Structure formats: C-alpha cells, structure tokens
Image (cartoon, rainbow, N blue to C red):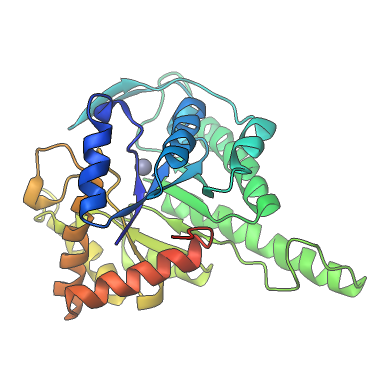
Length: 304
Ligand SMILES: [Zn+2]
C-alpha cells in the first residue's frame, strides 16, 4: 500500500520517527514524504535517502508564503514567510528519489492579518506558478493543496491548460517538439491532495487531468453543524473514476475515525482504503490494488 501524502519528517515524529517508519514497513506501507518549505523539503529528501520505503516531494506550501498564525485542532504554529527559490528547489528535486513538486497551491482558510484576500491570492499564485514551471521542467507531477479556494484554483489551472494548449499548437506549427514533452498532450500532471470539496469541483479537476487524493476525512462522521459537506465529499468518493483515486493520510494530521484524537501515522492509510471499499462496494484488496496502480502511474519515479 502507498500513503501518497504524509509528513513523517515533521516535528510530531522527532522522538520516534524510526519506530513509526518501522511500523509502516511491517505493514508494507510505502510513503511519499511531502515538504512544506525549505527545511521540511530537505528533511524529506534525507528520509528518502535513508529509507527504501520513503520517497520525497519538495516544494513550498501556500501557508508559508505569508506569515500567519495557524491554530487548529491538532496543531498550532506561526508559519514562516518564505519565497520560492527556484534554483534551490530545482537542485533538491533533481534527486532520484524526489517524485513530485509540492505541496503548493492556494490556502484561503488561514488568512494572514493586515493583508487583503486579493493580495494573498496574488502572492500564492506567483508561488504556485513558479512550482508549476519547475514541475514542467523536471517532468514531475504536482501535489496541490487547496483550501477554501477551489474556484480560484480551477480558474488558475484552466488558464495554464489553455496557454499550454496554445503553446503546443504553436510548437507543432513550427515543427519543434520540446524535449520534455515527447509530443504528448501537455495536461497538468498532479493530485489535488486531501480533497474535501464537492463533486462539481472534483469534476473540474478531473477534466484537467488531475487525480483526487482522499484522507481520513472521508471516515469522519458528518458534522452536526454542517452535515451536507460530508455527504458531498462521499459523493465524490463514490463517483470519482477508479483510475484517478489516490489514498493518503496527511500524517501527522487527520487521523482516521478509528484513531481520532491520536497522532496520525502513515500505516493508518488502510482505513481510508476500507472506507472507499465500503462506499464503492469493492473489496479492500481491490481498492489497495487500484490506488497503488494509480499512485505509481502518477508518481512514475516510485521504483520499488
Ligand atoms: Zn500535507
């Protein structure tokens, strides 16, 4: 089984990461360890170097593009403002065990004080575009984070897809094939990770060629204050084409319902697979198999 998105390099595991990784190995769980800024990206690569069962994704999370106080159920920190240093990340991402770029995207849930929404969107868009360019240059898939910003992200991705389409047509006209594209159609390769939106948004991402990543959130009971959002999310789990589903934990966050309140660990990803099996009327083995095939197709550098 592959946990397509976790943060085993985060401080939550600073005392016992080796034991957690051992538990994952015993349960045959391979991990994509995702960076959120410079230091966590460097550490992701270090873990990937040290362990066969860990691969790394490097990039800059939108929450770190401005300095913000993040205060949630399991976590409280002050994000540190950082610009995207293209050459730094390019060097890091050239490592054979780096399989993706991210997590990058738009985050409008944690808005920094004293700066307006439009400015935040502009800054995060610049960060995202730089990472898109890097992903394209290195032919790596993107790990996309979207929170309270589906409309904005879909617009941004559509603009990219349209301009890529034009660029492809132009290059065909003058008979130049970019070495990175080998003539294939240039849709955006990536996953919208920890998807919690509705089917309408999901369909837009699917049309753009993206995969949808589900976390333990799909195992949560509906919120009394907002039962509709869980219903809508489960509709996505039910309808998503089977060749576009990924499973992930986003550990240390979002422990599945069976372990709610505990620190999440990557092996708990089986709970996400179980829930998908239940909703889609499949066996657990089938879900494990299809999500693993999907993960390997997208993150094609996974070689174990
Ligand atoms: Zn994450």
